[in-house]
Image (cartoon, rainbow, N blue to C red):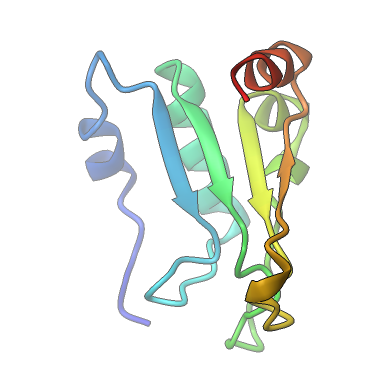
Length: 119
């Protein structure tokens, strides 16, 4: 529970060629559940620098701190949804690794078309 998000350090780590930020949300392995303010700050910084957010939310149902709740990154608003791809799967929550199933949510039509073209 000692980890704290530092916006200045986060923004300073972005380089001109940085194109993607993988957000482990809730964080693995610390178990940290990002607050709405932290998520908004991350999203605003990424948008400002043209960095796409890939929000790995596979652990969304495994929140151990009863005082925190998972907030889907894309639910923060249209601008956050458009600049993100969200990944989820039932394998962690329901212990179904053999199911080999996952979900990828891509709200932005341009990004969705590019993803479909490549895969």
